[in-house]
Image 1 (cartoon, one colour):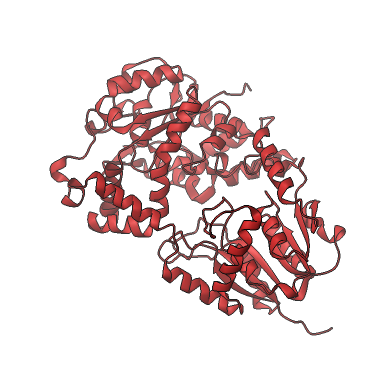
Image 2 (cartoon, one colour):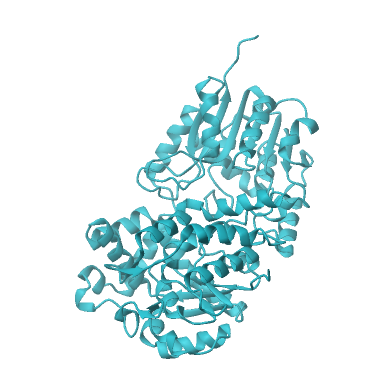
Length: 562
């Protein structure tokens, strides 16, 4: 069977920026496979195949095991099951202008689609992200529009961080990215209008919640425009920006330019928001902007100074609140640690690492409260330290400066390991080389020993116990299980094991990875370990009822002799 060659046309932008609108305008073009429901649902089904989390398609040698990984990727967060649900109910809900939901007719034999996709993927020689994306869209097109010609582009809205455009382009070498720019005031209003409609609250309350509870999302959204503009200048053949107002008010100018850029014919279907050839809603062309007379005074009277004040408020959210500091200090106290002294010690170490100023969580990509936890440990008791998961070596260098007289052993996968190469964007040779050069610099101290082996094999290469173990390797099962097992046996009786990236299960959120937490549970129950949790970051406001990502501080409980 001839392999399809459908390239990703990635629509990016903040929420309520018009991605669904553009997808509906592209719907029906013979060279583009686009579905209006892609915005809210199908993109998440492909999240493991998009940029922010590298594809889990290289972990196994056997074709059948690779197929299991693909199915797991498509089932992420239950989004593949959403498609099954739509097929059963016979329609797709499509949100228009925040408070109007159109039910789009939808007929699909989901189970035939699922089988056809797995059968098609099993014929691929290489299960890379580009190939899987292409086959995924090819099978979807055959099932949803069997009479349509084979397209060259597949519209996607990958679940990427606002700043990961570079990795997106690296993951999909044939991709083009369209970023929709929308005025901040309009985004605030449209988002709050949608929140108010779906959650039965006032728009003003939604705005207050957005600026206080979700400042991190807003902060990234505000900065994303500058990042997108820079990428458009650096990669004009692969990255394009479109103004939202131009898209909805001057469609006749925008769509021919977009068609020429991606190399498709300028056809009449590009000027009406459609679903299978039927116009969805007249507001999707000509003017989709909310009428000014319906805009609450809170937004209608918003000036550039008001926007600037909101931006300032958001930036201030990058500083931990007093409440968050008090809460974290209490968690430290449970371990017998002094949070204030740990912060002072950390600040004293930073100049030795060439870092100006005081500690803050945005000073580099991997900075978090784990540095303060390490600094809280009494140095006189620390003779040997083990780090599982070296990455760039920033934490290794911090440990070396913090405990200059201790022996530090740090472990990571070999540079030629397939798992190593296909994670954190290291498929790109330049990024891989830059990370390894940074790591070499950070590991230059004489008290650091670097071991490049799978951490499962650690007992074969090192002996003796460690006073501190920093466990930041694989966070999925079974990696986290054998890392914890090895760490328990190598930890001194009075030692401290710190484990990164723990999510405590919450009923409201089932999409997080709880493998680390679940591995701890039976050991806690059987009185083998004692665990205290502390926040990994204080500057990210958690969702209601969710404490966010945690660091586990683990102590061994003495066991009676046999």
